[in-house]
Length: 277
Image (tube, rainbow, N blue to C red; front, top):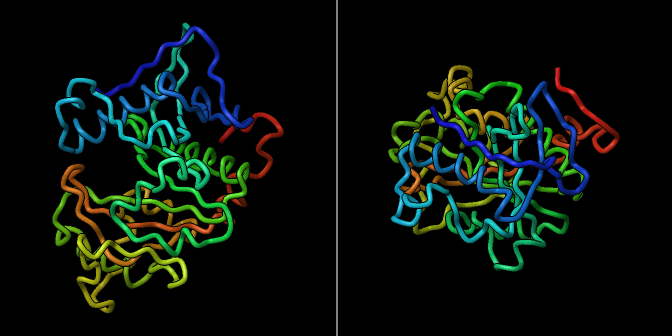
């Protein structure tokens, strides 16, 4: 069983006043700093490398942590399951990188796969989201809603106008996802003024089937949950997919205008405890 347990004698402190967003014994926190994010990195290692088949280098195999150069720049959204005795299990996570923090390194993670120059030209605040995963025993409505509610609170706190990043299909053969990729291309392509495009050297055509052959009603339910979540928020998909052989995925780019995120998930945050029914 995959499980990431992080023990602490102290109460978890959530950054930016984002706290007490709960569903039973599950709760959302925003943290930063190497000592507080190891549990998230451990969960990511177990999901991405052990479960999904990503390729691990020697350092990664030894540490059993999913780590890159962006870790210290990002805020990390954690969904935790509280345990008796003061410990907690990290059962879901998201990595959040604002433009202000990105400037310390000069690029977003998404830059390695997609041309996001149009998004960078957006005059408002922008947020890259990524490295999302959930423990297999907790892939349910409550955890997914907590992740989205946490993002909603964060987006509201920093007045984010556009949210973007990568989302993935498992496996590296686009033909295995021909109808899904074609559906995204025909029905959810981003407006040209904010549309990312896969880098030319990595560009994989998504338009693999004519629109009239795509069964939109049957394909939507089988999309990866994360992609469905973005689409339910009226999110868009960029032009072209990218094969990530290291992580054993076929990646697409996503863009979300965050007004729907804040309207749906950030109402009343900061005023007290929020319980999800």
